[in-house]
Length: 340
Image (cartoon, rainbow, N blue to C red):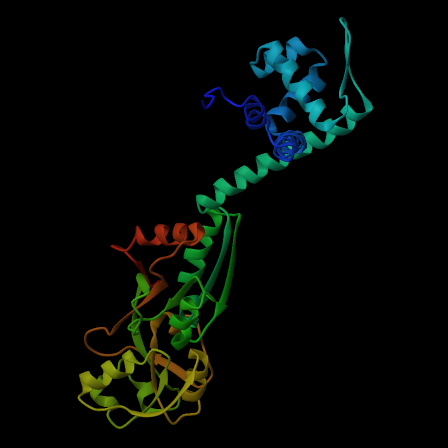
């Protein structure tokens, strides 16, 4: 008859864990404990620094706790935690007195500086977010300077945002869009009309009119004003903004004969001073730039309008640039008029 009793030897064998398995499990647990004990302690934070400095200032835990609006036991725990993390004793404490140790004196000095730096960093970040700190690169065509609009707009903004660094430079008008898209400029003063890509927008900030620049020894110089039809046989030199010349031709019903486009407005006037051509320039230029051999005359009939605008990126992210634009977009309904 076959016995149904369990084999005790097999029972003991199955109940006994493989020694290698047992050793591995114990080793794994020990490794986990070792890793936990070797995990880096959290660094001191501003809470620790403020507590240390309060006790260093008052040399009294209760008064320091009151100044911090903390319970004294909480302050004591924070100081003890800081000393443990630093592995240095910061204060000598007795029932009657509290003194800074040498480590405490050294640490308190640097802790004070650290909190000052953090406060300044916080203030700087907030100022930058408000557009009160940063840098703006501005390009302009020369007539923006001659008209005074560059000085008025940049000067007004600078007074209100003294911590924003503003760099200005004269640029060629046909380079404006490219320089804005490439980030070489943040803003650009130019004279419309000009074809701009969809990524660039503009705001008119000053209105002006065009006048004629003619040689001082020409028959035209003897006239008080000049009709477009009287310019039919004249040669023209083009400024960067050619719309004035084209409008004079349209009103006089002729196609202007163009003999050059030398670049800046002063270069255009220098060409007129040679005596063989005329030009159309902003009145703002005529009122402040006198060149030997050149005189200015108004265009007869209805004034030929022109304006100065600020071009910028449509999706501008820099708070300082946005703050600059916000100041002048608020005045779009009433742009600055050229001075009389």
